[in-house]
Length: 254
Image 1 (cartoon, rainbow, N blue to C red):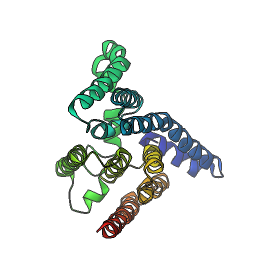
Image 2 (image 1 turned 60 degrees about the vertical axis):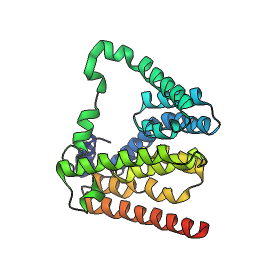
Image 3 (image 1 turned 90 degrees about the vertical axis):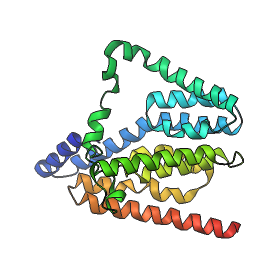
C-alpha cells in the first residue's frame, strides 16, 4: 500500500467507522500478496534450476521474475556464482529475458518505463534515508544511511558470489534476500512472499522472523501510530532471532 492509499483508508476509518475500512485494508493485503506470488514462484524456480546446474534455465527464470517485479533481481549473485561459462550463460539469458520484456516500453516511453519506482522510493522515505529503520539506530540518516545501505547490499552480494560452490543455492538465496530485507526494513509485508518461498525451499526457518516483521510496522502505519518504534522493534527482534540461530548452528558444527 502506498502513502496515498494509506491516507484514504485512515480517512475512511475516521469518517465511516465499522468494519468496511478494515475489509478494504485486508483486500489491499491480499492484492499485494497476489502481485508478489508469480515473480516469487519464478524466482524460486531459478534457484532450483541453479542447484541442478541448468544455467540457461535459471537465467531465463531470473530474468522473467525480474521483469515482473524487481525484487527477484536480488538473486543474481546466487545464479551467477557458478563457473565462468555457466555464469555467462545464466547472465546472458537473464539479460535477454529482461531486455525482450522491456524493449517495447523503452522504445515507447524511454526513462518513464521506470514507472512508479522513483516516487515509491520517496514515499517510503528511502530518498531521505529515514526509511532504513535499523540503520537509524546507529544514528545514520540522509546520504550516510543511503551509502551504508548500498554498501551492505553490495557486500552481501559479493559474499554470496565468493561462497563455496558446495553451499546449497537455496541456503545462500534465503540468507541474501533476508539480509536485503533487514537493511531497508520494508513496510509492505507482502513483499516477503519471495522470502517465505525461499525459506520453504531451504528449511532456514529462522528467517520467518524477518518475513513477518513487516506486519507490526504495516499495522502501525495504517493506524497512524509510531511507525519508527514499531518497525525498529519488529525488525530488531527478527535480527536477534536470526543471529541467535546462526550462532547456535555454528556451535553445533564446531
